[in-house]
Amino acid sequence: MLEVRENASSLWQNVHSWFIQQLNDQKPKGTIASLDGVRALAFLLVFDLHVNHTGVWSDGNNQIIASLFSVGRTGVTLFFVLSGFLLFLPYIQAILFEKEWPRSKIYYIRRILRIFPGYFFSLFILIMFTQPSFLQPHNWKQLAQFLTFTMGYNLSGSVNGPYWTLAVEFQYYLLLPLISLCIFGLTRLVRPERRLWVVVGSLFGMIAWGLLTARYGAYFVSHPDQTFLVPRSLFNVVLFIVYGDHGKFFEDFAVGMLIGVGYLSIMRSPRKDYYLQKMQHVLLWLLIIVIALFLYVALPEYNLPFIPFVLQFRFLPWTNEFAFALCYGYLVIAVLLNPAGGWLTRLFSWTPLRWLGLISYSLYIWHRPLTLILAANVGQYFQRLHPVLTMSLFWLTAFMVTVVFCFFLFVLIEKPGMRLSEQLRQQILQREADKLDATQKLPRISKEPSASDVASAHS
View: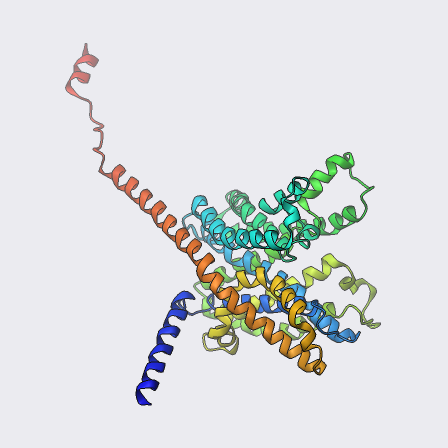
């Protein structure tokens, strides 16, 4: 019996070590690492929304329950805010703190090898087994949009609903170096002490652009007979580029970018401790306001007569979305500036939550198809139970199946792409280092005139 226990213990340790190795749990823990937990929260929000849409249970027309589940759509907003923050950090360091400018080749290689393997694998499987009609010649135009990350909200639903957000993210990835370069150019027009405000002003301009395109883009999409300055056929091209059919969400990305500017400015300040203490007090006072704002925009069905008409922005989709971006921006700031032993840092650094965040890309892509398959095949058995048990057990079953499936996809599909990305990055850096060494070893050309030069000059 003792030998059996020892063997079982040894097997468990080996499995646990392998599991940790696959998920890179050796990653240094800290405030940035805790954002893996925030990413997990974003996935859980979207997961709740789509599990509720499977039809396995009903909310009984309860407005509060329906609103709580519908808030899950804002998990996408949190993903956008996180992307804006994390991807803009290297550019902030170059713009404001004279660090080396990120290499565009490395940046694009890393983004492509992080996104393409998981996405194109899922696209191939889903089209082959659920939508083979896309392979017919008359549907190649629609298929081309999936292959080029230009598919919109409406088209994505025909294959996999979450795909439209990947198109938005990828288009932001493509534009970020150009946006950063423009901001860099503007900062070089002013003195160094004013560059921070130029960056902040530029990002507020980006927010304004996002809100304006969201407002008027939605109008022109819903009014195909209207145009502006140019014929509608030409205007459709402009509309496709700047808005698509559901928005580009630049305002959400810009919120994350602003957080990055503030975070690095505080962490690199000589008065870092003072600013951290002040910000923690400010965040504490803002907590009630943020909670009130979140509940206000999350429950649009409830009429609040004491709210002035000018504040009824929750009924407008574009302002409602931005309000959620501000609330999630507050969450990201609170996690970043929370003390090392603070409860927020401990919560979002909790190992299971961080692991969930690490595989959140596959989870996000696959949770919708998997929950629909489960609902179609076993949902009827859950419906025989008490509604609370139906909801709880189906949610748990769908969650476990999705996590296990996506963990192996992470290991087999995503990790090889990430390893290749790192290898290519090292090769590029090594080639640049070798080229620099070769340049430094070249013999220096003497600046002094030779004897023949002197003689010819005298003659």
